[in-house]
Amino acid sequence: QVQVVESGGGLVQPGGSLRLSCAASRSISNILVMGWYRQAPGKQREVVASITSGDTTVYADSVKGRFAISRDITKNTVYLQMDSLKPEDTAVYYCNAHVQVGVSGYDYWGQGTQVTVSS
Image (tube, rainbow, N blue to C red; front, side):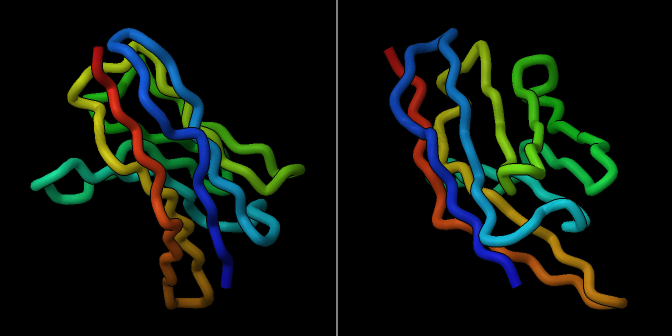
C-alpha cells in the first residue's frame, strides 16, 4: 500500500510555469508506474504523463514538449514540471501510483491539486 500527496498547484498566467510534486509514503523505486492525471470541470479524468520504475516516460499529445515528469527516489517524490501553460491546462491534477503485486495491480490516488491558468 502507498499514500500519495500532491502539492504545488496554484494560479498562473498563460505562458507561465508550475512544478507539481507527488510525495509517496514509501519508497517509489519499485512502483511499476507513477503518473499524473487531470480532470477539468465537466470532463473525464485523463492521463497527462507517466514514468515507470525503469524511468520510461510517456506524455499525452497535448502536453508533449511543454511538460516533463521526473522522479527522485531518494525523496520518494515524483514531479511534473509544467511550462508554457495554457488556459486549457486548467484542471485538478492527481497523482497515481500503480503497484503490481504478482498478477494483481493496485491504484492509489492523491486528493488532487488545483491548477488554474488565467490572466
